[in-house]
Structures are given as structure tokens and as C-alpha cells.
Length: 274
Image (cartoon, rainbow, N blue to C red; front, side, top):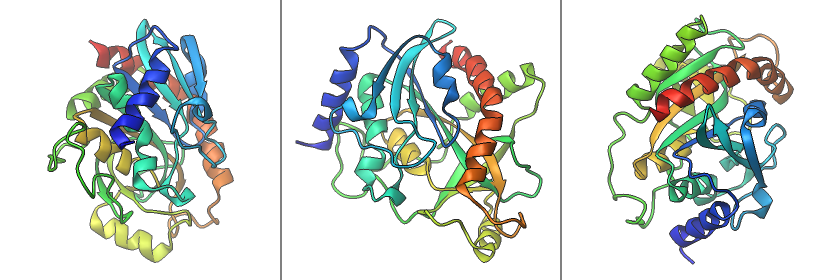
């Protein structure tokens, strides 16, 4: 069975379990899963029940797809994701995005926990992604192209939609806070970066560093899905932060900013749907 057929089978399984036909999807990163609990009329489907769906092994990723409404707008929300550092291949890391595309999703919000490289950022800050640098060593569309998903070669000059970023800025202004923008650099992980690596990444123009999102963005753009990226700066990166880095700190900071992120998403979804 091809990747396209597996994604179609998974999407079909989901569609028969809800009357909703969402065009907007949201992926919630480490420690950021609370937004899904605020959906109206939710239908929750464990990843384990969806055909061919990979399972997250990382704390803070509960592993459910929740379909519901936000201000009467139908949405599909993933509580958690899988990562390449868990041992998953590119097709598995991006399988959920392929399934969302087969569900009919046209706009995708990707959230993540990230280390702050830009010294102007601070722990607990939300930052919009303006662009990314892929240093993971992987690309999910390498190999034989599946034309039913998208073309062999495709443009990435606006990986993160300027139009959707404007909506996010409008939503944050209504909440009386400013959203900065930054460049997200993706590494394979799971080890945190060294101070020397962070200095090198800063020289390359990176403002944030993390272990997710970029492969999902590439797969989404391959299918013509518009992407909005939002990072939570859960810690300052090695060499900037003097204390040792830990996943517990990432989780704690994510939980502290969950309410702000949830309100931002609640405000931006109706703008995206207009």
C-alpha cells in the first residue's frame, strides 16, 4: 500500500467518526496541549486507533486527534506529534500532515517548544516563525515523488504564510501583547545543542532552535497547505542560559504559557476562516 493510500485510509477512518469537515488544523507541541480541551462538541480519537498512525513516545505529547469547533469554526487539533529522534522515518514524522491534507485541511498551525537563540527573546515568549533552516539532515519529500500529494519541485520562499502571520499579529494586538517573528532552525536531536553550535546557528541567522516542525512544514507546502508557525521559547539555548537544559523545564514553561497560546489560537482561528 502506498503512502497516499495509507493516508487516505486513515483520513477515511477519521471522517466517519465526525460530521465536521475542518479546513483548519492545529498541531500542539511539548507541554502545549491544553487548547484541545477547550474545543466545543469534541470528538477525540487516540492516535493508536487511527490506521497506520505512528505513536508518540515523548512526555507532554498525549497522542490524540480532537475534532471540534472554535467560535463555530470546525478544526482538527493534534495533541502531540512524533519526531525523527524517536526513530521514525520522514514518512512517519509527516504522516499526520499527509492525513490532514487528505481530510481537506487547507491551513495548518504548527506550534512547538523551542530554545531561544536571539538574546532579545525571553523564556515563556511566543514567537511567530517567519522562516526556517533545516539542519536535521532529512527532507520528507526526498525519494520518488507522489504526484497525488504535490509536484516534484515546489516553492518554499514563503514557507510560513505572511497572510496568516498578519492574522496572528491582529489577534495578539487584541490581547495587548506583541508577537515577535524569528527564524527557526531544526536539528535532529534528541540531545540539546552545545554552546558552540548555538553560536554557529546565530551566525547563520537563527533566532530559535528545535527538533520538530520543519519536516511537517515541508510536507504541508508540498500539498499546497498554508502554514502558520508559533514557537514557545521554553528555555534560552545553551551558552545563553547558564543553567543545564532539561525537558522538565521545557514542559513547565509550556504549561505556564498554555493559557496565552490557547487564547491566541481562539482569536486567530476565526480570522483564518473568513
